[in-house]
Structures are given as structure tokens and as C-alpha cells.
Amino acid sequence: MKIAQESLDDLAARLAATRFTRPLPGHGLGVPAARVQHLVEYWRDGYDWRAWERRINVHPQFLTEIDGLDVHFLHIRSPRPDALPLILTHGWPMSVVEFLPLIDRLSDAFHLVIPSVPGFGFSGVPREPGWNRRRVAAAWAELMRRLGYERYGAHGNDIGSLISIELGRLDPHRVVGVHVTQIFSLPSGDPAERALLGSDDRAKLAALERFMADRSAYLNLQATQPQTLAHALADSPAGQLAWNLQLFGEVVSDDYILTNAAIYWLTDTAGSSALIGYHGNRPPAGPSSVPLGLACFADDFFPSIRPLAERDHSAIVHWNTYDKGGHHAAQEEPQLLADDLRTFFTLRR
Image (cartoon, rainbow, N blue to C red):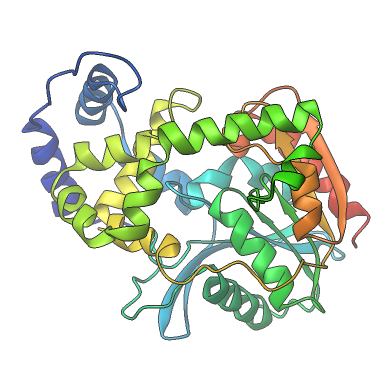
């Protein structure tokens, strides 16, 4: 993978001409203007895309056409003959870069497959409606079949958690287990269901409701007007950065934030990456039954609530909680996450 120099030159010119907006009075109004200005200045004067490009390119990468769409993926084979294949699915607004810290920590015991979700980064952009998480999961099942893997595990974060669980539903005879960092089980609205929750789970539900009330504008816009959003972000790398920054905050490095923003902007995938939340993600008819494991990190803004999770999944066999880390566990606490993955899949081999 190599980005054309003229694309980087165009990016640099746009960053140099950034028109910064004025700060608004008050708090909780979105990404602060000063934070965006700091990151744009670093992107322009200090950040090195080519260094990150080389870091990605250390690992073997491939393109294959599945269901009419090019799928990009990293494929790192373990030297261990009995290694378990493991497919890792990133979230939004992330990319395959999300899992770079896990590669050295896992590749002794796992064959790692790390694809770019269709419409994100280096995979192809859907040319027709319908690329929801179930269709992505079907593409992953086909990818693993082509690679010759008859038994494999799946891990995901953010929308990658949703895709990985769907993969377990679609390919239960080959998926030995699904490991995620969130189980997105929401309240049904039944007051009796809420009344049965203990105090810890009610606190988690309150935190989830605060997030949905205060910070979910991006979900609503991407799920209703992705094309409208794309016009603005395709024209402004600073706008793309600010949009991504909603879910990054300050818990990950500036370089990681900028690398993901650069990938989205350079590949013009702001709009297409929103489609995963737009097309037909209806709740499944019944609970999942593939062995499911959760690594729950303390500061994840989307907490998993066990009674609700058990309503939607009949085979939760692993539920670990940690007193640190957050939504970006592979970046914040990669060793904890790697160890949790090893523990879960040791019993699934």
C-alpha cells in the first residue's frame, strides 16, 4: 500500500489553508476548537504519514474480490503449526491500524487476518445498497474459506463487535468462538426488565443513556444522511479529523488519531464508512448460540450490561472486567486485551 505523493501534497495544501471555526461559549458542545487546531498544526508540521505507511507495510497485505467488492486485509501467519486462525474486525472511526499493537503479542499463537471493513480505508466502496453488518460477516466467512481455514475465531471492537457476532451466527460450524469488547444489548423498553437490574447495572445503563443523549449525534447523522455528511468531510481534512475525534478524545495518541483521519480522508471513505449503520441492521430474530466472550474495560463509554446481554446471547462463556482501559482497548491496554484473547481461545482450540 502506497499513497500517491500528489494526494499527500493536496492534503498538505488543504491543511495549510484550514479555516478554523471560532470557539462556542459553554461546555459539552462537541470537539473543542483548540484541540482541533493543535492536531491540524501537528498534522501539517510534525506528523509523518510515510512512517506510518511503512509501519503498516511491514505486514503482508492482500486484495481479494468478494461479493463484487475488493476486500483489503493483513494476513500474518504464525510459525506455530497448530496456530488458531483469528479474524479481527476494527470499528468506526478506526481502521486496520487499530490492531497493529496486537500483532506481535498474538502472532506466535494465532494466524491473524485483519481486514478493512468494506467502505473503510483500503477496501472497496460499496456501489449498491445493502452492505450492512450481516453482509460484511458473510464476506468474512468467504474470506476465511478462501484462506483455507476450516476452524477459526473472531474478535471485534465497536462495530467490529457487531460484525464478529454476526459472523458467529452465519458460520457456526467453523467459528469456534467470538470475543468482543462490547456487547451492544439495549433495553427493550419493558419496565419489568429495568426493574430486575441490580445497582451496578443500573449505573451502567445510566451511563449508556447519558452517552446516547449527549454524544450520539454522529450515529443519528450517519444513519440518516450519510451523503450530506460526506460532502463536507471529503472537502476538509480538518473536518474529517474533528468528526473522527468525537470517539477518540484524548485517550489515544495524536499519531493514532491522525493516521486514522488520514486514511479516511485519503481514501474518501467518510460517507461509505457511514453506510454500515445505514442499511438494514435489524435485530436478529433470536439469541446467538456460538460461544461468546467479553473483555469489558472500565472507561468504555458503551458499557456492556450482563442481564441484557444474556437476553440476546445464549452462550456467554467468558466475561472479564478490567479497572482501566476504555473503548480503544487495543491501543490503550494492548497487553491486557491480548492476554484476554489468549485465555478465551485457549479453551476453544
